[in-house]
Length: 289
Image 1 (cartoon, rainbow, N blue to C red):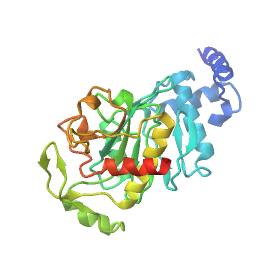
Image 2: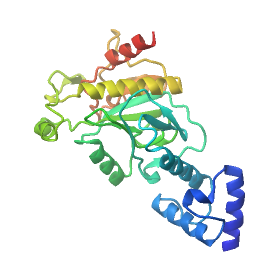
Image 3: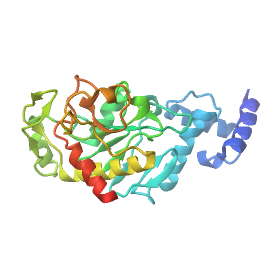
């Protein structure tokens, strides 16, 4: 059995372009097989000792991150390649592969779905997602750091019905005003409060808003993703041409291409109430002009 794994991995290495040194091994031998199994176990992969397609994708990602973590603080991973995003605060902190669906071919998402995480930080958001075995592609932390959790070429589980065609962005916000003092205690300063948010034709109680630096980071990320995936700079509009603040049928039917709030997809959600997608999209268009 061992010689079969060694022979398979020699062929896999030649065809896919990986090397034993990626796993701190010196040759195709028993030591390499043991390290492959350890790697697979730590990344929620089948621990069989074979570097097949799924193991290779995860191994390649892990290797690139090890090689580039210090040298590329303003880059995100897109389809296995690190790309500059045009924002100075970026962190890559990937979820385990059990929390999302790896795509075996190049994905062409056409909608960006915006959420809030109902957590006090990106770190706590990641812990919740991992515990619930779900995911989003990015979380924008309180200080404007864009935290990447999943490669946008992979399918994150963040919005039922839109996962296969969408990219998920969470803006970190605990939503409820009882957490208002938490942010000041943590050194972020008073968090904006929103008292006029209307979603699904009802006015919401006063809730936590968004730090200006979070909106700036979100704008930079949306601009990058729209350019990278050729997603139109558009948002759901009501019959009067204003931002639609309830469900939007074309988005539910996956016919809309652009940026939406999660509440545009279901009446069971109110995120991201108070986020002025219209103003954000218009600001990006001005930058592109």
